[in-house]
Amino acid sequence: MFPKNKIIFSAMQPTGNLHLGNYLGALKNWVNLQKDNRCFFCVADLHAITIPYEPKELTKKVFELAVDFLAAGIDPEKSILFVQSHVPEHSELMWLLNTITPIGELERMTQYKDKISEHQKSINAGLLNYPILMAADILLYQPDLIPVGDDQTQHIELISDIVRRFNNTFGDYFKEPKVYEATIPRVMSLLEPTKKMSKSYGPNHCLFLADEPEVIRKKIAKAVTDEGGGKNEKISGGKNLLQLFKVLSDDKNLKQQLENQYRSGELKYSEFKPLLAETIIKLLTPIQEKRKELIAKPKEVEKILRAGRDQARLIAGKTLSEVKEKMGLL
Ligand code: TRP
Image 1 (cartoon, helix red, strand yellow):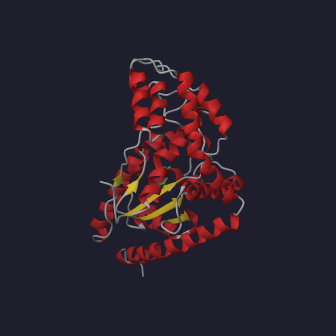
Image 2 (tube, rainbow, N blue to C red):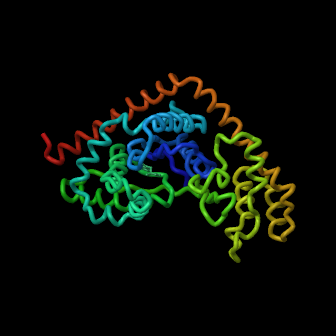
Image 3 (cartoon, rainbow, N blue to C red):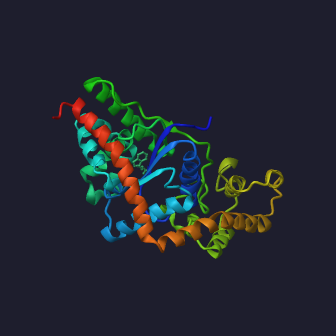
């Protein structure tokens, strides 16, 4: 059942250039959730500084991610949109939760292990403590549901442990975080459809929300359609493109027709690909127009973020003072 009257929290790191996988896998879902729920959406800038970065670039990426959220349809009248570092309660609660989190559990995290092998010259305590900051993000707002991708499941389980430990030690307070899993097809790379769409493989693997129509047409034209080296039909490039079309189009008959053609091996990519490209362009055009409008009005975006910060702090501050009291801090 689609959630109603729930408190929802989610966050995204400002890593630059959102792609269609980010939009269909997360943002679109957030936009739908905000209609009937109390939603908190956060730009996780404090998480982003755990890997080497350029300060000026970061400032730009934070602003652009807020713009992307708004352009995709996050409505500041309905949702609380804010930047993590604007709400100091996140860092403070994180410190408190640090003291009840076993190092061994942090060291077990797959993402931590991946990151320390990727950034061997800058292994810092922030990389290890990353999930405790996530715990603080979430627990300050006591949400019912957290829409996140399956790459975050392990972190959410760790946060459940932190909650149990807190409640056992200081008395029942936090509820265990619950992941909200929407039914969203995985959007795969255009060139290696066995892998999830990710900009780390290179720009031609992805469709970016900011890609111009001509770029989209070119990328789709170059997308692989064969079985991607496998007998496994589920991961073929053609199937990936068809999936994408099925998510984006409302035309049931056409979708069925294309599906049938695909199954019988008669799908003409020379006709299907341009159709798909135009469908994607139709989705992205209004988002891109809104994006341009907002980029031209940075003061307005800042005002929205300040208002979000004020609303978030009201709730976060209350939680933090209750937690401190429970922990015996005067
Ligand atoms: N770590 C998450 C990611 O990279 C982003 C994030 C930060 C988050 N804090 C969170 C997600 C709290 C959910 C809840 O995707």
